[in-house]
Image (cartoon, rainbow, N blue to C red; front, side, top):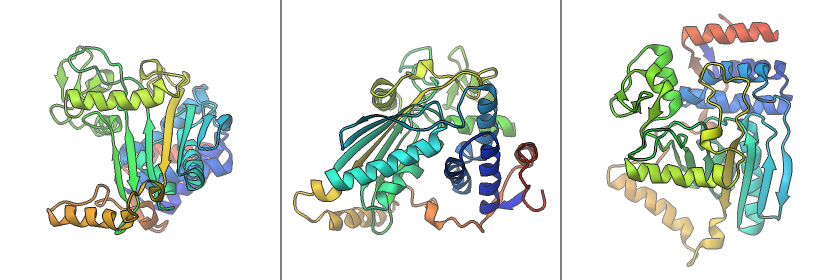
Length: 342
């Protein structure tokens, strides 16, 4: 089905608003979901909307949640997310972190007791747009076994980093598993096989069947080293912020889990490069780093993907027919208008 970025933002915001989410939060959440879709990251895009609505209806997430301040020392801020969706909550944390880092040089803002927040790379934007470095960490349901182990203990343990340009911001955004779990869900919906080495079934046997992988586990990227990086992310989220470790977080893709709160943890760190620059030439070194990477035949992380500012509401967007039908049903139930031609 063909539509536009703007039409899908309106549809998703209307569906979330009808579920009880305040308009400002619904619009920010819809922005994060649709921009991820437009960037080609459907695993964190429109595919997730029916799951979010199901969780609202089943009581597993609170659409009307507000951020509650737990700690504020100036450069260190902790919020309780009230079991709300993470998209708007992590965005608010990033905006707060950016403002505090401009004042103090460094800031760390946590959001505990939250929900899935989608593509982490989007949340470095409030920082890089203010010429700050940004780091974002999150956890989720356990899908990764320890290296040499046989049961899941860590999530995909995603992380993101943003470095301000020129020539443009560099954005690192990755899961520490061999593939994001949403990619497995995409493959299951499309009926396609997985690449070898991505996943295990429930018994720990390697599999290319996405349905078996959803019931089973994902391999860490880079073997034991990847598991160690995943452990670092879990320590900074579930261990530091909480309240849940990955092993205690409900799996939103599992049948019957919609009514179980997830209580996910997020951590955002912002750094003002001016405060850490020993010779005052950092603004020259960063472009030099980019030029050296390009001269060696490479490209900056994130350079192959459109930035959020390059995505217009008028841009075309293709939605797979089965997903479009599900979203149309949600729009009808919410009393929201369908995009033209749907």
